[in-house]
Amino acid sequence: KQEVTQIPAALSVPEGENLVLNCSFTDSAIYNLQWFRQDPGKGLTSLLLIQSSQREQTSGRLNASLDKSSGRSTLYIAASQPGDSATYLCAAVGPYDKIIFGKGTRLHILP
Amino acid sequence: KAGVTQTPRYLIKTRGQQVTLSCSPISGHRSVSWYQQTPGQGLQFLFEYFSETQRNKGNFPGRFSGRQFSNSRSEMNVSTLELGDSALYLCASSSTSNNEQFFGPGTRLTVL
Image (cartoon, rainbow over all chains, first blue to last red; front, side, top):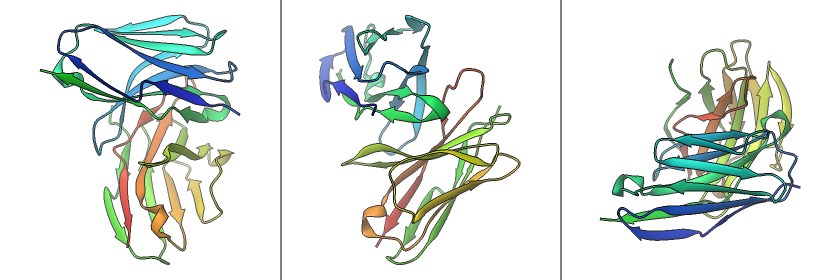
């Protein structure tokens, strides 16, 4: 049974810092790993999708890596801004689009 | 391309009633999944439909059901509502090319 864990649960950093969010999963038989952002009371916005055959994906200041053998993914945010404050969720996508989510990391960027 | 839409956005019901939520996927997407999000349990998978067939189901009681129509629109029904059903219900659609999930804004259900 797939379990997804995100550490830390919450994080506060000063504006401008680079930061890393961690995601681990127990079953390496995944189709892909997807990172989302969720603002309070809103739906999820897809940030990056890493296919199981890929090692990393980049979009702007975001970079996500995937290591299936160790069951880990990281989301790197460069030069953080107050607008990056949100909850970040990772999700392991298995067969038939069954997605198992982590509980998220609440990120607060201090101006 | 229009995104995933969900209706209604907010809903207030009382215990024992039933409710139907609707989700329209991105044009061309044939897979629709439903999730329940609560502060305590986080995001939990309900079920997934593809071409009008349920392919996968999470661990929810039979009060939770769904269906998908030939145009890929999906509905989710919850019967005999309980207070614990209060949650944000999210649907997501994906294409078969890479399984990237796109979420709608959700329906906030409050059960009184």
